[in-house]
Length: 317
Ligand SMILES: NC(=O)c1ccc[n+]([C@@H]2O[C@H](COP(=O)([O-])OP(=O)(O)OC[C@H]3O[C@@H](n4cnc5c(N)ncnc54)[C@H](O)[C@@H]3O)[C@@H](O)[C@H]2O)c1
Image (cartoon, rainbow, N blue to C red):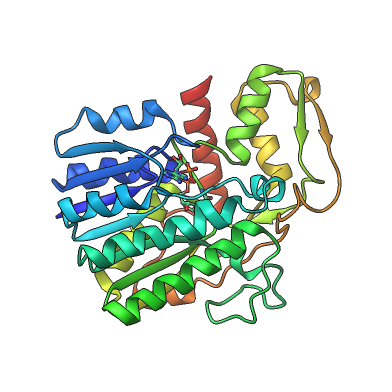
């Protein structure tokens, strides 16, 4: 299959590319290295079947021209600003980097008659819901970050294009994804902080934030299973695990995995229930739709976190 992957230099994409290339697909990756890493792209460039295109997805003319030339069969749309706090500092950031980028991509798909899209949405779209675990049909949606507002806008654009131009789409609303080759996130943050200074660790918030952590291998298994199995025009699923892990617990396990004596690490907390404005401190996603489809993750939240810590320590330390 000829496949386009956006955000190809990012965390989830670098793990995805490994699988797609092993399956023998012709894969075209796009990234502008805003958050992605050149060394992650280099991993894929060694393999046959991969072509990398470095440009900003805001450049619609270039994107449309590329799609007209390639006429891909499937798009994995993973590019976004994955740093929620960025959007608070620059209020049009997610509007451009999330919503407008997604519009550009859909328009490129329309003109090249590309009919299949897999999209990485987020459980953040539910804001601070009154129903936990939160099902896919929860509403009304009142997001508390520009990132989440943009993900909702992307979903609505995708379903409008799907209905208007018979494009099939698979929308996955993720829990927190962790694993090898990270670019950001709590584990990446703790490992790098402790590497810089093994005597202290600052936790954002009070550390009691708790969320379902999904290993990237499970995330990719789930997306691939959903894509192969769900056959509606619009397919929308929470992709998470049913348990959760606290940030304080992640800090404890990271200190241990770094081989440090907990008594010699001064742990401080910035305080408040959230790590940053827009952070949702308690996330629980209803996973029963994916279960009914026939898929369950191999790892629970704690196992995913412990494995991701090992992988991150092995990579960076
Ligand atoms: N990692 C998670 O826990 C998580 C949770 C929910 C949703 N998601 C979504 O999954 C997707 C992938 O996440 P990730 O963790 O791999 O993030 P990531 O930041 O590692 O990857 C995103 C990639 O997109 C690229 N990019 C951003 N804007 C671009 C633009 N305008 N043009 C070209 N490239 C651009 C970045 O450089 C980066 O390489 C994102 O859409 C994210 O919002 C991730």
